[in-house]
Length: 442
Ligand SMILES: [Zn+2]
Image (tube, rainbow, N blue to C red; front, side, top):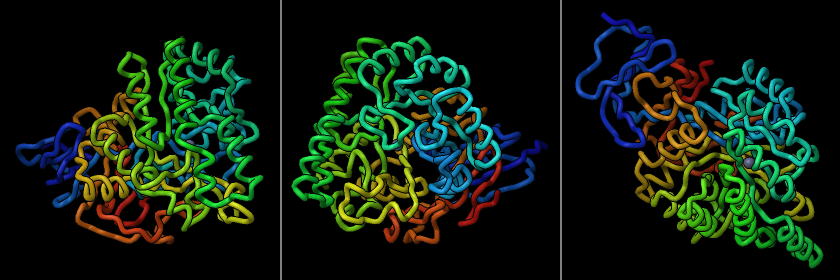
C-alpha cells in the first residue's frame, strides 16, 4: 500500500478550469495524485477530511511590501508571511522599495533572501527595483532570481528608491527586454498629481475627496499610455500594477489587441472599498492610486468577470499606527492599505457571493495567472507534480473580521468590522500545514 505524507479526502477541488470532488495525495512537498473518480487508497502520516470544504491552489500574492530588512517596525517577513498564511496565501513577491537597503542590487537581494529563508512561513520571491541609478545592476539581479522588476513613474515616498524618468524607462526597458524579464510599473503622472495636490493644499482643500481628486484616473491613463509606448518601442514585457479603474484597463486591453505584451493587476481594495471608506476611516483607507466611487468598483468587477484583469495582488502596504492618524490634512498621512490577510475573503464575498464571479476565476487571478506570468512552473494549480501549496476554505462560514484576528505587526486595516463569507480553515505550504482553525502551526 502506498504511503503518503498527507492525504486530503473528499474536498471540492477548484482550479482555473473546473471544480470537482476529490482526494489529493501529497509526498515530499508535492502533489503526487489527484483522484476525482474514486477514493484514494493508501496510508498517510496525516489525513485531513475536507468534506464540505473547497480546496484552492494557495494564493500567490504577487504584490506585498514587507519592509524587511531595515524598516521592520512597519511590518516584517515573519508577521507579513503569517498574515498571508492566515489568509490562504502560500507565496509572495516582495516589492523592492520599502526595505533598507532597497532591492536594487545583488547584495541587497541576497540579504533579503537570507532573512526570508529564516523568517517566512510561506514561499518568498522578490522583485528587483528599477531606479535611475541601477541599470547596470539589472542583469545581476535577474541572474540571481528576481521575479521581475518594479519601477515607479511618480515618487515612491521612499527617499532611497527614486522614481524613473523617461530616459531610465527607455534604458531600463531595453535591458529588461534583453534579459527576457518583465517590468511592473506604478503608473501615475507625477506632473498631474503634484500640480493638483499643490492647488488643493494651497486652497485649503484637504478632505478625502480632495485627495482622490488630486490623483484622478486620467493621471493613471496618461502614465499607462506613456509606458506602453516604451513597451512598444523596446519590446519589453510590461505589467501595470494596481489599476484602480476599468478605464485604465481599457487602455491596456487596446494595447494588447495591437500586440503589445502588457498585463494588468488590480487589488481587493479597488474591488471593495470607495471614497466613502476614506471619508470614514481616514488614512487607514488611503492609497495611491486612490479608491474610487461605487460605479468604478462595479465596472472593475465587470473587467474581472470578462477576463480583462490578469492578476489580483493585495498591495499590502503597512505602516505604524502613528503614521495613519490624520493630523492637519489627509495629504500628510502615510498611504498604503493593510490587506494581505483578507484578499481571498474579499474576493469570495464581494466577487463570488455578491456578483456571481466563478470560483475558478478567483483561482485563475490569484494563483494560476501569477504562476504563469512570472514563471513559477510548479505552482498555481492542483495537479500531480505541482507543489502542495493549498488552501482549504469553508464557503459556508461567515465571520466578522476583528482587530485581534490580524497577524500584521500593526493591527489596523480598513476591513476590520466587515463581515465575510468564506473562511480560510487550513493553509498548506509545500505539504506542511502552516495555519489551521485560526492558529498558526509553524
Ligand atoms: Zn505596492
